[in-house]
Image (tube, rainbow, N blue to C red; front, top):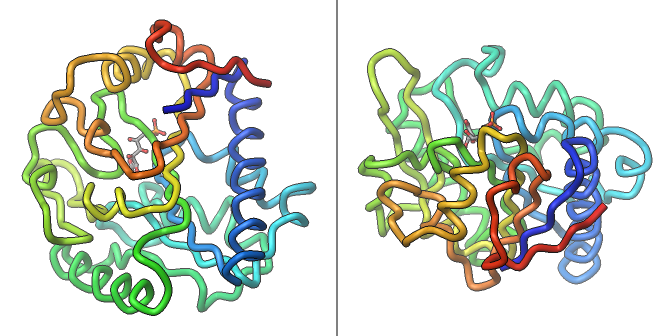
Length: 248
Ligand code: 6PG
């Protein structure tokens, strides 16, 4: 796999914006559309702002882009915890993307119902086009989770469904997540990881023993290996085992 290490969060975010713009143009030229699943959490915030600003905004063929999410918290879209809300504020409300090409996970519904509804939407969409997303953007938690695939949860063992409901505990909202088998059908998975707090998890995911119960991001093994975009703080514990390209 390829690990590209950037000097800081800003450089990392620009690299991710360049990659997404390039992939969007390539896929639209090849197939007439580009399906992109967004990550939640804080790391992609600067990336989303960049995609909504020059030069990237003007480089992307938004009228052929279809936007999805890799996971969602079961909260209303205007809740600060909503992945949909963040992406709309920072990106989708600021680019000329047809509204009917934005496919949010219905976080206002109970998790199981939202998962069923989103899975049906995905099956309708992809049955007509391809087997999986053109690009899925994923983050990495300090505990090694990705999307809402958390350590030691039932979601890690889902082999049939594309989308699953996730109950963590009674003090957090339930979640909805793409499953590892469906993420692995994507043509390209891109991880974006920033900050010293992720260094241990990144090292263990990429260079530790294969133990996906503990480090669920290890379940993400698409045919085309993921591209890891990290900053130096997150990559500080990586050794020579990972192919590291110092980039900026
Ligand atoms: C979510 C995300 C989740 C996120 C990681 C990293 O909904 O929380 O999809 O998988 O990518 O938790 O989050 P940060 O970017 O905030 O560190």
